Image (spheres, rainbow, N blue to C red):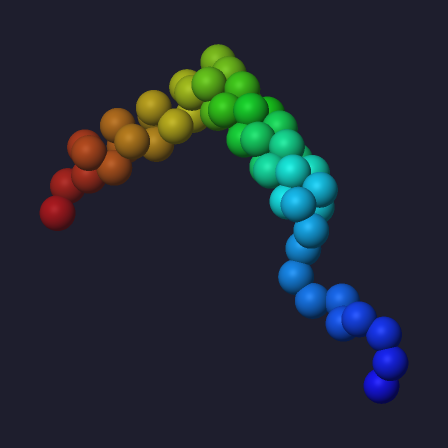
Length: 53
């Protein structure tokens, strides 16, 4: 039972985690706004709005 416990993240780990999250968000934004994905989402939304009940 000696030594410091290894609980939580340090400031540098928060910084690296924040940068990684921002990079992932930027890549996801580019993918979602690409032509084929935008077209697929548009056709899916149009199909859902035109559904007959």
